[in-house]
Length: 344
Image 1 (tube, rainbow, N blue to C red):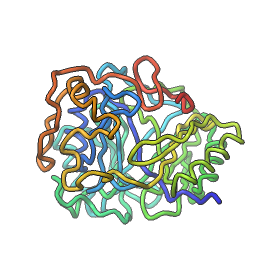
Image 2: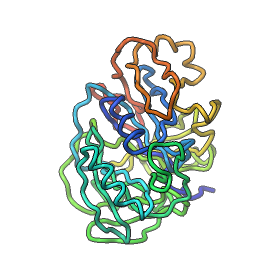
Image 3: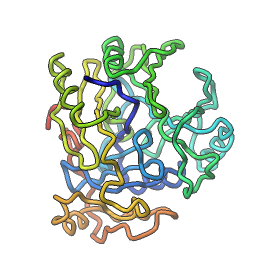
């Protein structure tokens, strides 16, 4: 029997510069760089993970850096915004912290009894800090005081070409309709973290995927057996669904629903601490066993990263300044990640 998702597993975006990405998410936002690895379909492209101390499900933001990527254009169908949880007493702290770093801040303003701060990362990815409850403990050793620090993912905002169909998919996955304000409809999963998906019921110009856009949102699935059941259900409904994929730290599949949003369904385990020392997460380039024989070649193609204080260690990139460009985790279009969930 299929079980409802507990909520969001991770959110993945497209950016240009890996170093600027690390500086922003690890230093400014104070998330832990929990894994620097490569795109498993294109081993010369980085894949960066940020989250709580262990990158647990419901906390991870991940990024593919493509230095030559054109800017994305907001529109439909897109995942427009990723939101992170902060304590209610931290609003002034974050407003000042972002402004002091030259980041333009919209807000704070109220939405669904929450306080929201809106801003963008260096590539233009739309982000929000939202007050709320979360079972996530903040990363205690980060640059932000623990009592003010981010407590995982709050949710995402979707702008579908067909909000009624996307709403049906959310319902199928286990999200319940809980509120509506203007053209924003809120759905919530039954878990204890990363449970919110807001669906925009409005018209919009077609967007363009590129730097600053969010490629996909992943929701949590209990185990691999459930993935195969979800695969069969989506295929029976005629959706564009991938095969089940081994991502080493989890198993997953991708489904492009008729409203145009790319969802990933991902297992909670084995997790980002699988076969590594949790104390040294993010300190060096991690490769799964089947890529270890190519380590020297891969490192020679990746630009070295200067890691933020608190991460420590040698980042493992001893090669020259190669190009981080390459194919995306789900195929390629024009050198960047493809929108085709069924391409691999």
